[in-house]
Image (cartoon, rainbow, N blue to C red; front, side, top):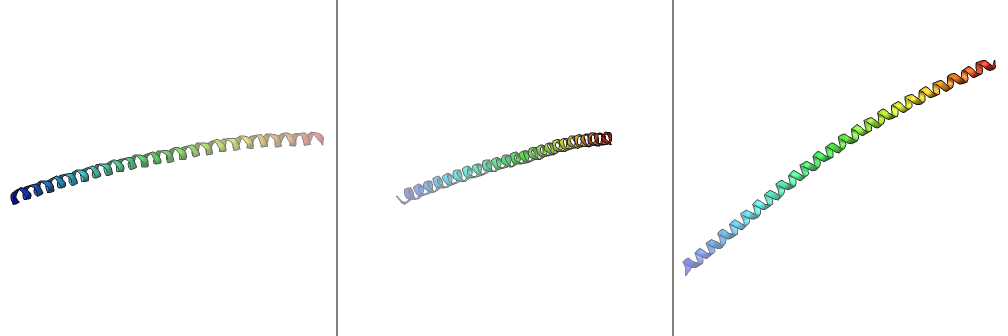
Length: 89
C-alpha cells in the first residue's frame, strides 16, 4: 500500500513538474513574442521619426523657396517704386 502511495505521489509530482515546465515554456514563449512586438514597435517609431524629419526638411525647403520668391517680388516692387520716383523728378 505504501508503494502505491509512493508511486501515486511520484506520478503526481511528475505531472506537476511537467505542468510547471509547460507553464514556464509558455511564459518564455509569450515573453519572446512580447519582445518581438516591442522590437517591431521600436522600428516603426524610428521610421515615423525619420519620415517626420524628412517631411520637416521638405517643409523647410519649401519655406526657403517661398521666402526667396517673396524677396524677388519685394526687390522688383522696390525697383518699380524707385523708377516711378525718378520719373516724378
